[in-house]
Length: 307
Image (cartoon, rainbow, N blue to C red):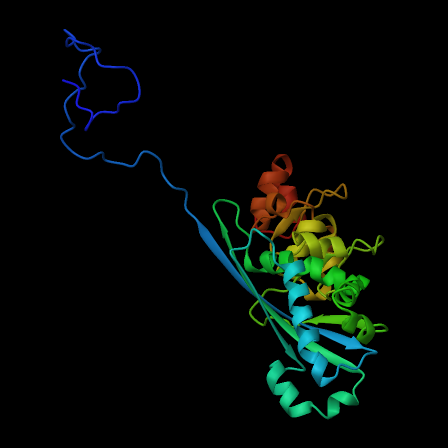
């Protein structure tokens, strides 16, 4: 019978007689144990952490005690706006003045502030990024966060944005100039980059004066002079590394002359071949066998090897 207390009264009314057979085959019996693996595997995730410290020097401006908090708060907000990507798991910005927390600086330097025409703001950015497959290292993550920030400070738009945040800062920063410096991390590798501005030379530098686009994208750097020269100037390796580089040890074929012999890379580095891994051998005999096997004895003799 139709029971209004337990059935949904909205819809069609029940039939007056039961159905004579099921509408479909019954389900199979329950499985005898749990499945051995999940339906889908969650990809492994990784968290990359980095911390960047820097200094911004504001000159041609005097920040009074009553305006210092506003000044620092707007700098913190502006750094966070520029440096913190939406994809970061964490991006926390802290700010100090002349190497001290703001409150301490105000307490100890309230009188000298009236006489100073420059202020150094110290900042630190703590970063975390979560990724699944392609993950940045800490250096690339730092560069990603600071690239646009450095550009904004260098081209003056950082100061202009601060001036636009309030009429007070518009007046205080009317003639202000901001310059920056980055506090090096002693545990971080050096940022060696190719100096393509020196078109006639093969040079890698780590002076912090790389072009803006390298700072923004961050994928032009290598951790050492050798690595940078091998990546960008392998065809002119010795000129690039100079006395500071490491010359690979071994023997290579002297393709530049008619002599069928092998040269010592340490004694004759000036003609090292472009693809060192292919042409460099551990001894004269191996080099002659691989490259001059049809005149093997002559090659070993001319190369001062042992027959």
